[in-house]
Image (cartoon, rainbow over all chains, first blue to last red; front, side, top):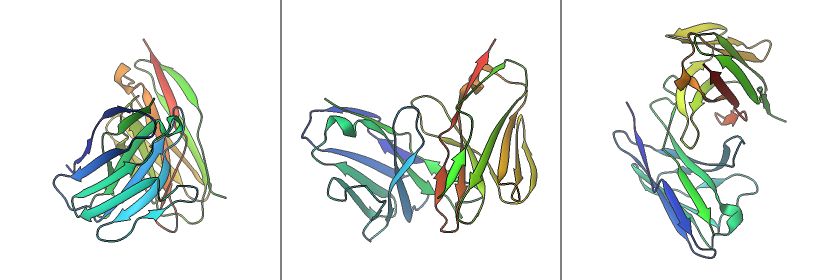
Length: 117
Length: 109
């Protein structure tokens, strides 16, 4: 089946530094990648939708300059958390449409646990 | 506004049957998904319903009633490994997924 590889799985960084999270679609072309954030015991919150070769669409309340998304190819999308702060500590997950995105659902990366100290 | 409601937590016994309900109010409807999420892991796809009725897939079944804005996930012959959170998500008229907060299912021996 379709696989989305997400790295790193865990990262601890100091406040003020930047962290890059990568998501790669291994056996299919992901024209659209969704980036989610999930705080403990809460629902998935969509942060932004990225389309290959164009600017990402950010959800209301998500800072574009803080969460930089790049979708330079059909198989790679990256999320960079710039100048991270402790409140950015969360579980970040990417998701890509597989085929029509309906019958097969959306394939998720394995997630990145970010801890900012 | 758009809203997905599901119970926060449920407890069931190994070998038993459990039904997790989901009610929704969204702007348009293009299908409902159920995902399983183990602690610290990403969600994995379980089912998709777009027409009314029951979809059976092994030990898991999912039901949809569009007129009632209601779905349930039925898990049979519960196993300890089924302990996880179960997320209900609806695709709205803009083909955007609206997620419920998830139901944490605890299986006891």
